[in-house]
Each structure stands twice: as structure tokens, then as C-alpha cells.
Image (tube, rainbow, N blue to C red; front, top):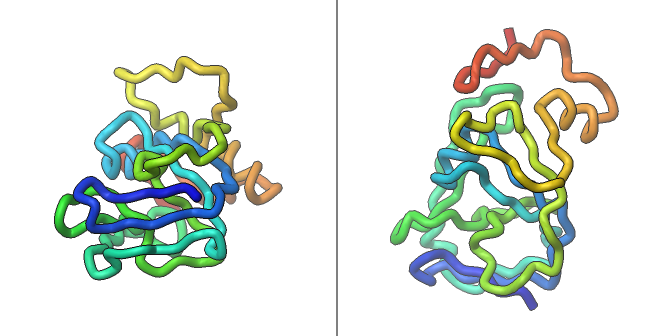
Length: 159
């Protein structure tokens, strides 16, 4: 079993296993959510996840939509502010890797949204690096729609 918790321990959960992907996201929202150069997220299947305690402690913030619904939703503990898993899970979802108290048994496999990596940061490992366009192709098997404009590091939307 893989145990996990928020900073104050009010939210506790366990995983039978992490399935991946294990991605390090460099987009603006994930950097702000983590307060770091990237947010490492581990893919989880709902049937392998169990929230042990603290559901009432989990709060959500949904940022405005940039590309398409659903909105970017950030879950956090209302006591300590630490990220948490979502309070309602779908069949597949991601958990911030920093919440895990035990090894997930898998290692990071890629960096994503690398075009948003700030100048003060340097990706120095050998993992594959994907921009938004490359990641879209990887996940959807086709090119990003041409109407999607990347205006700047802080403003991305559909024209």
C-alpha cells in the first residue's frame, strides 16, 4: 500500500498502486499551485485509491478555462493549504507526487509544457520533454487545432 497525506495530516489516503504517467508539468498554473519550478503528478486509477480521512478538509479552486472545459481545478487542505487529491474522483486522475509518504513504485517519465519553463530553471535530466503541441499530439494522435493561440507564458486561449 502507498500512503499519502497533506502537510498537517488531516487528509490521508492510500493507493494500491500508481499507474502513471508520472509527469512533471511546467505550465504556469502548476508552477503556481506547487510554488516550485514544476508540479510532479502521478496517475491513479480510482479503484486503486481510497480516501481514509479528511474529505471535509478538502477545498477546491477552479481557475478560468484556458483551452476547453473542464476548468483547471486545484484541491487543497483548508487547514494547512497543502495540495490534496480531489474530493470526488473520476476513473483516472492525478495526485501530486509530493503528497506520497511512500514510494509510488514508478519514476517520473516526462516533462510537459516545457515551453513555459522559466528562464531561472533548467531541466537537467534525460527525460523526454513535451511542449503543448507535442503533448497534444501524443495524447490525441493529431495536431493541436490551429485556432489555439499561445499568446504568452501567462495568456493562452482560443482566438
